[in-house]
Image 1: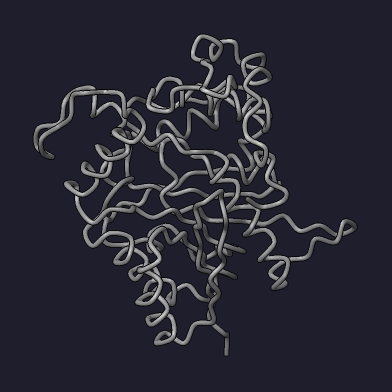
Image 2: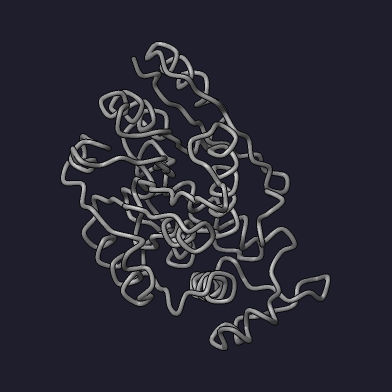
Length: 306
């Protein structure tokens, strides 16, 4: 993880339980006698997030409705730390303490958890406009903002009315964004998303004997970890098609955005994306982020103005 990521050394479960007593009943000891939680238990994971946001980021309250994506906070804030470094390194804004510039960001597909705007506002002081196509997600996101009064001026929401567009209908004529952020839908179909959820649940619950024989016959126990609405988890063509559409549409807003960025989960997605960026005459970089044994990445691009 990034050297400035506060979660580099794992979780202090005792401190988290003190900050949020509701978490305490979910604490268990692992084989090394260290306190942890059962990460296949959605309630435990949600309460862990709630405790982290309270202890580390000073949020008074946070929640999401059942069935919506519950994001791992360490990985989400890692994207933002690496992105902050990238923006400074490439002079998208100045960090001169005498004349600080407040970054204005656009979060595409913020979800019910509105996690990137919350973290960006609390950890970096950014202002964020967050978009989503799902009414339930936007209602939950606004509730999370309302629960933390100091965020009212830092975060605002916009609804995307068309599933054909990403920036159109969101970026207005008077807008300028220093950066856009996005964690795109990963899977290419609902069936693929469901298979991924079953696989994830099996990895987290190896001791369970009952297994689904196929995707259409998932047991209630195995579907418990299938958190996330369809637009959060999958879109036609998966992340490759989504990011390609984002690149094509981004060119229309090249003068209103300093730097476009997007997470890329699959390494094999990079080649066709890079090919399209070259074709679009965009300047781009791929920034890798190491999180334990996992290597993730985001791609950043902009268009040279005439």
